[in-house]
Image (cartoon, rainbow, N blue to C red; front, top):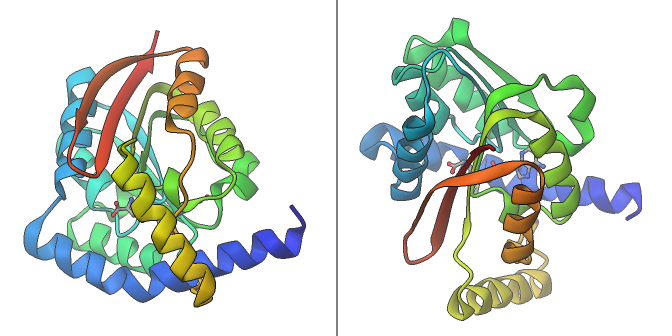
Length: 216
Ligand SMILES: C[S@@+](CC[C@H](N)C(=O)[O-])C[C@H]1O[C@@H](n2cnc3c(N)ncnc32)[C@H](O)[C@@H]1O
């Protein structure tokens, strides 16, 4: 893919999620973690959180990794393409008293690869459906995970696939800055397993599937 095309996609993702960042923050402050995030936190805690480092890719406003810190993790790095999300994650971390145990980096994890340290736990919550180049996203994120790899993604069901296809088609016609992506989720799970991980936790809601893997 030409560089200009990738930069356009990243710019569109930044525009869309920065516009919505305040809503994400307000929702977290009012209601706490979403259902799929509660599942991710439970699944990761079941494998073991104590004194572990966390890398959350596409961290949004940070509610999930800040909760993992509250439950025993040692430190967290949040990476996001969206400037608005990173700004709010930083301020939420400070408000919750985690300013000194968190670091926030603005950018596309795939482009930043070499500058990101390995972590015990890598989390991607509703991120794999926000990025075109799933193959590179998996290569980089799996390479950073020392012990645990946890993610949520759209449940592979025809209704969900059809829903995302409709949103993408309308978004393409109306030139929205961002549209969600549908990938081969079965192939993604296989790739995680062939990278040396074993599934340790699984749950699903109507739309989201949650999986937590640990190094075999
Ligand atoms: C649907 S939002 C989810 C945010 C957060 N995980 C949550 O559940 O509240 C997806 C986020 O991933 C970010 N994102 C997508 N692709 C990314 C990439 N390659 N590197 C870093 N962030 C990315 C977007 O900017 C966006 O903030």
